[in-house]
Amino acid sequence: MKKTYKVAEHCFSIEAEKDFPLWPKMEECYGPFEVHNSNSDNRFTIIVGDYTANRDEMQLVYSNMENVKDGFIAFSIFNDRDNGYYFELRQPLSSEVNALLSLNRDFSKATIKLSGKIEEQWYSFNAAVNLCYMFSTVNYGTLLMHSSAVEYKGRAYLFLGKSGTGKSTHSRMWLNALEDVTLMNDDHPVVRVWEDGNIVAYGSPWSGKTRCYKNVQAPLGGIIRIVRAPHNKAVRLSPIQSYASVMTSSTGLTWDKRFADNRDATLQQIISRIPCWNMECLPNEEAAIVCADTVTKV
Image (cartoon, rainbow, N blue to C red; front, side, top):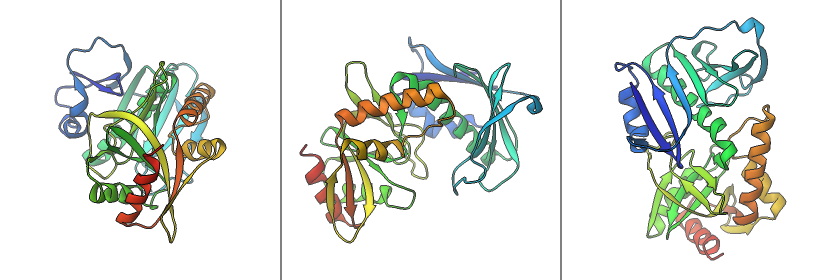
């Protein structure tokens, strides 16, 4: 059985048996993005099945096992000289591998083997699709942003920040304090720079703990980093400050030079066209009003 999805105009497919136990769980978050008659080429295909590899002959190129944060997937990446890249995915704070992912050199085809309880399989499978999407679309001016995104008066605004600084809280403040605001995504919206120079934000199937899986889009109007402070004030960032702010919230792994170069090129285009800010603020509705009154006037 094969299903195809389109996120930020990039198509990808999942192939699995008809009784694949994760199909029902995929319906809520991936269902809004499913397409039945697409003429677009697939960026990648993931085949769910059996997979074996001789890891002893592979070179470790990246691992977040030592510093993985609570709530994030733990994984290691190996250079498989014959086939591309080999991933081992683990549950947070666990040493047990419950997903093996093989991804070819151009990031267009993957095979995944899952094990463990259904919830464990789902967690790793969803992370694997996210990783494949990230790798296969970066060459097309596309970035997954660790942020919360709202649409306000026809434009999208992204709120960045470290976990716990109040990205989602600030989005809720906009929803509560302002009219004509909708939540687009609360964890990983997509930003795409088109060849004509337009920069558009999109909803995605990856929205963290908030069940906000909307197939929506809007021109990007601003990028705001949330900074806790005893006052409410929006400060415009310089180009260098903007790059540092956006780069730290764009998901990506720099061990692959092609990926790093393409991500850098896209970041440069974003900061040259989109105003970036620090929002020094309290977690209250006044902060949303002050922020919107400043960043939407540019």
